[in-house]
Amino acid sequence: MREGFVVWFTGLPASGKTTLAKALEAELRRRGVEPVQRLDGDIVRQDLTRDLGFSKEDRDENIRRVSFVASLLAKNGVPVLCAFVSPYREARRQARMRCPNFVEVYCRAALSALIERDPKGLYRKALAGEISNFTGIDDPYEEPESPEVICDTDRETVEESLGKVLRYLEDRGLIPKGAVARDTAPVANPVIAARHAPPVTHRSSPIPPHGGSLVDLTVTGAEREALIREARGLPGIRLEPYYVREFYCLATGVYSPLAGFMGEKAYRSVVESMRLPDGTVWPLPIVLPVDEGTGERLRPGGAAALVDGDGRVLGVLEDVEIFVRDPAWEAEHVFRTVSPDHPGVARLLAEPRILVGGRVRALELPDPGFPEVSYTPREVREEIARRGWETVAAFQTRNPLHRAHEYLLRCALEVCDGLLLSPLVGETKPGDLPAGVRLRTYRALLDNYFPAERVLIAAFPANMRYAGPREAIFHALCRKNFGATHFIVGRDHAGVGDFYGPYEAQEIFDRFSPGELGIVPLKFRPAFWCRRCGGMVTEKTCPHPESERVSLSGTALREMLRRGETPPPEVTRPEVARILIEATRGEG
Ligand SMILES: [Zn+2]
Image (cartoon, rainbow, N blue to C red; front, top):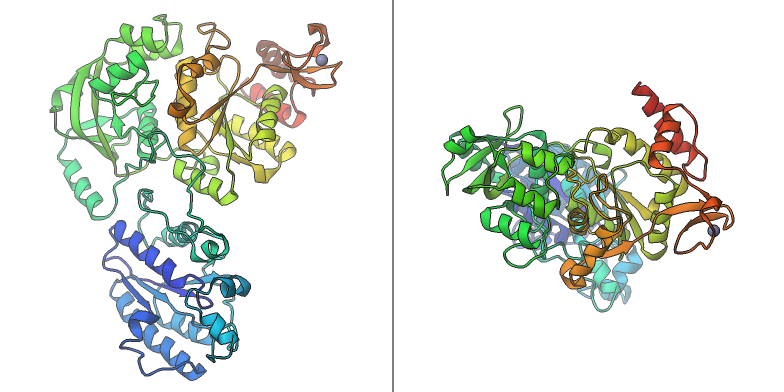
């Protein structure tokens, strides 16, 4: 049996306690935490505390009775959500002593905001002297000294406050971790709504995800338990690390609107026309190749267990479809070359030709690594909303950031509210700098040269394809799912060697209407330091000859670093150079 617990919401009248308790109740039920009991004034006053008034003695007796009932339920494994003004510290302390797993949530709000809001007109009456013993006006409220959770309900949305409570309960292991579906109608925080006219409805981020809603393929609660049992009897598909990452991207909505690995119809449509069968723009096939032996064990229309390298069942693939790919045809369309010198083509040619499509149900989220920068699209969207950014420029990178990149970031940040630095941490080709080292360089650059409150860094867990223009569109759409409104596209984005023209990755955006992309490309020329201009410029902004430029080729720069020489500060910040020298020399 799961452990019971008591979440005790306390705060001034109309501070949002019951609203929050109701939201928590709904979310717990959605996660399959049943039964759950909510207790608030409206519920208990009809019966349990009908005889009590608002004197201190009666208020204490009220809390004593309620906490007694709550403790009985909680000891029998039932989560109990109590929403009471409960103004006296000592009464709350006694409730805490009595109840197992007591979680005090302080719904904190400025009295002025509450008086302004006042949905039942009670503050007005209390101020007019029409009612007495009103907490906050002529009765005291003793603030909690160390509540488990504080929700600033006059500033946060219900969703944000709820998120805090859920995270605390998850961290304590009192409820299962579960991704929160965003398809329920958002609830406006009553306090915030009252202070704005018209009422503010919560936006989880500035722009909708690709396809309209953020996909969340995780299964929770009783459904999950049933699916785990079912998976034991299913044929297994063993996922290489590359495909574990694809699974993670599907499960968390990085690839919204995709809800699984592509079947033949979607695959052919995407390869040929960069669109899903319904017309939605989608430039790269998201497929699952399997070897012949695995393919033979699968039944079309049936299901299969998706298993990682350690034999852990990550999820279930439903409505299985099996088909065969034509690697040359696919390579020609997606990479515009069949040359095995292209790393994306080389991978494609090395993979089995049998593809398995189907809907993904995620039972476990694999560890994406890099915990300090790993956030799901939902989490990044919530943070963007919390920061109030209306425009967000995302920057994809798989390289260290030099002054040239820094300049692009600054230009983007001059016109957008926030910057989402989105380093790719999935598979890259041999020779690319390891993600761990890159992350240290990003931190060094951001900590020393950017305002922390205007930059978010969130890893991009997908694999690199080196598909140039098509991948630029793909990168943009995925960042839209993370909540970005703008996407920085530099020279030869996602290219490799000289397979693509330097600005093809920018030009491809013009083949789609702004509406169907839903994210704005910010197209940049390469930047460099000009001695005459005395700053970072591009050929668009500087009239001087090349001899005035301080710039190094990538190869020359890598050579310098390998020799332990610090590049000019006009090329690389010293804080970044130090980390790169250390890492390059460490490699031997
Ligand atoms: Zn110049």
